[in-house]
Image (tube, rainbow, N blue to C red; front, side, top):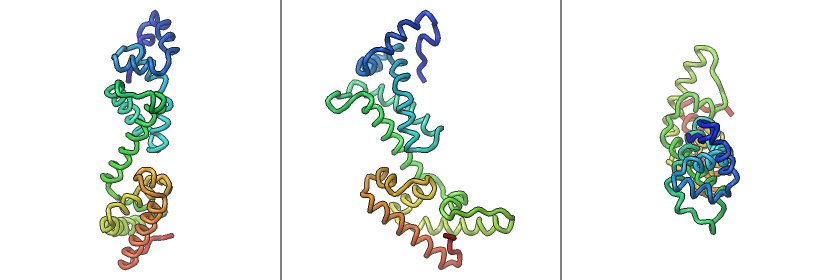
Length: 206
């Protein structure tokens, strides 16, 4: 993360304060020109909004911080492409953070393994005794098989709703699909998983 010259050199504080009073467009231009003081002022001004946008999507502070850094890197590479006619600098950089966070969710949903913790999140149950844990592991194995048999779009929707606790509206926004389609995918996926587990004598709890 960039640090201001003022934090390294107290004599630079007046310059840092002056940079902090510049308009957003000037700070973005300074970022594009790789001016250390203006770039640091850019980071300071937008950090909270970027982190908030990323956290709202990811619900994971550590991953959100990674997206913040990626957002600055993307803004640095594309600063000269900013078009003020299409919105403010704040809106532009927040949109970058939002899109990167959505991409992170999609990647995570495609690659994360469905383990017993996921099954617990989907079923809403938790095993305590050793016997219960053994039963849970067997249920997890069956649930993984049932999830693997789902169409990709239904599996993603169910994992996003069950593991990441997203609402149907959030799923629709992440997948760029109508709300009704998101609800249908989640409903069908839950129904198919229940049917598959019931056929194996392991119907999930409600």
